[in-house]
Image 1: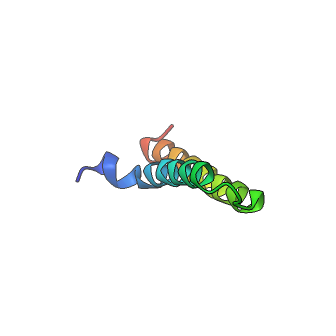
Image 2: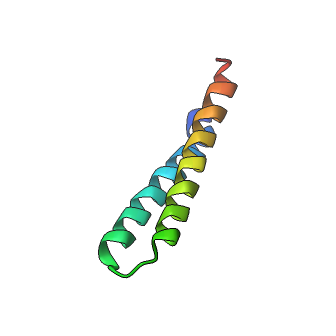
Image 3: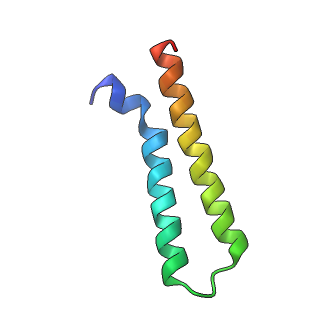
Length: 60
């Protein structure tokens, strides 16, 4: 695994959490909205962390 793949895992995990949240929200009709929002916020934080880490290590 190269350096790019090692530092991009938070972004990849965030995208995966986002996809799972959307799938669960679509499959379970009576899912509490708060749980869906919490999953989406976790995905956003992971994606932002991945972007910041990638840019920080690239020196931008």
